[in-house]
Image (cartoon, rainbow, N blue to C red):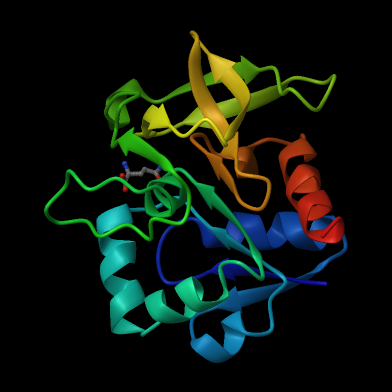
Length: 188
Ligand code: GLN
């Protein structure tokens, strides 16, 4: 199984390391040809506006939309923003792959970055979540399942195929979220 990490901008390197740690083949995705080799794709944290522009520049937006129902995508932080159907920012065109909306930087500015222990619905062990200018989920469709919350706010969502995470699992030694994503791919 090949797991791609969108490697146009942002924190892709740490995800590639995690995939390798779990003994899956990792692929740096910069072109359509890279993408078409993948069973799963991670869209990392970074800057959603920049990544959105680079998706068009590299002609990857259409290719991702073409295969979104065949592969599985995990969006982290800026990647979560891109998976959402948020329309309120003029400088940002999301992929609209999952039916939820976010407020960018809703968990605070860079200076308000924080770590918090998080209970995941599918794991007994808590994970330390790192929130850096993280998006806050403001609404989601009732077909979407919430897998974790803090302060009564959803922070991890799945529609059964894709996964969207507000915080950065790549900074934790706990691999539960990657395992959950890899299971989603394996079970289809
Ligand atoms: N606030 C950033 C954005 O909306 C995301 C920050 C991050 O990925 N750590 O693009």
